[in-house]
Image (tube, rainbow, N blue to C red; front, side, top):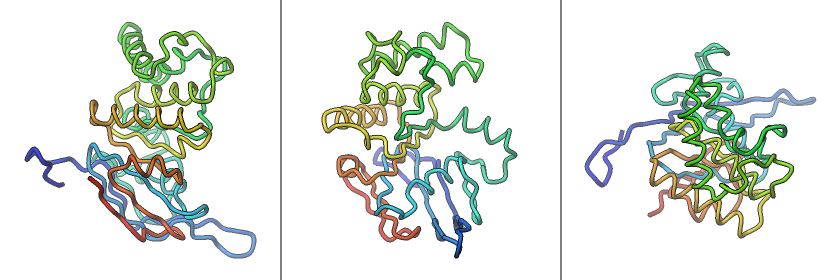
Length: 238
């Protein structure tokens, strides 16, 4: 736990200890993540970078409980998720983590409004509360006029903004974004990053990206570099 500029202590939201992931290949095992230690405080805006095959996405998936480590553990917001049963892990992700994927992963039969509200519906949040939060987020991502459009009627940039709004809908403490700008042009990527940076400041949500996009790296206040599944650099920026 560290002291912020305001003199208050920032809570630790992500702690990974000796995290490793080995995949059994056809000839030899492949060590995708190799003994990673990672400590991230609340409110950070951090990018995990590295060459293709360095383990960025694998590390993000391990931190989010979407994959199981071969060894080591992950503690999120004080809970060791690597010890949770499958059902408890699903419930934990539902209430504490927002995900943004490169492929958007929107439900094609639902409108933008319904996609954004879907997680809150799973949480059992009252309809009037859900609808108010969805309206707020549609306004924040500039898609109020697209609320009733299904994904097929939205551009790639619009779909990704819906995905970001969905990730933020339940006010998670952590948002994990895996190559969120990979399919976007420079204008849409810039707008999306500005949006996430603003929401990070205003709602104090912790953002952790896996990326090779220099635009994301430029915005990040901390850049962690992976090579062959190991952390080789960890730099903080003003």
